[in-house]
Length: 380
Ligand SMILES: [Zn+2]
Picture: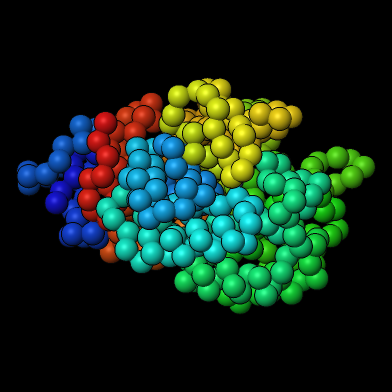
């Protein structure tokens, strides 16, 4: 298959007018200019690497806690509308009994995925987080990081846990080491830890932070916390919910100025009500209200996950920082996280021999088409 007449964004370069050839699931060639060969005419629109969301709980009525093969499947098909071609599905704090149930069903889905957006595994957000920064997680189910319990979770998931959000101050470094040794990305978050408490685990090797600024100790001249540390260290990749709600646009300017395009990955953190009408929904066991793209706890009003789509977050990031170029943008939507998850040899950019995970966008960054492994899975 050929996709032609496109403005193609490849790593560090824009091909103003080009075409690509696919061989089944794989990109066979990336070319400048036009071609007379038959193919899909992209009419001068943008062709970019598909978006990778490493922190998405759900949307369209489903989330990890829906806990069935069918729910995982419906979600993976729907999320392609946002230009997402692969994602790490996030789970909130659950009871052990529920986790075991959901994980075994999730493992079945992972072993036999259908033709939607590609799920890369699970981002486990809780129960190993701190009470002070629990956000919308259920207090009674929180616990300190526990390797023995994690081993059980890994087994139940059939080795499909890819990212672990945890409060690094509630363990002695051994949990961080265990994650790294078991190919699970340690992502520090939902913690009140101080700047100097971050150093030990940074030296052990954590380089990823869960939704910068949200659910963590912040930036204060008297009391510098994890957010200060994550901004200070150049090589920590920060997840950022760029919806303009979890972080104001002016703060997005500051984050971009400090971290630059190489150390930000855009996420949605979206929950099951994304894409649905306004109203009352559940996040785990908690009751939440969705109003526009804002989702908050019915009791207390704390933001509880998010209701915005990935493409919305991309546009909001650009509105906040209009100096962002398209080659910088694809770092934050695809390249950085693909590198972080060690899949950059297969996904994350438009390059010969990689999977044809692609999104076609209009000039104002509306999603027109999404291809996952060479297959057209969404068309507006
Ligand atoms: Zn989350």
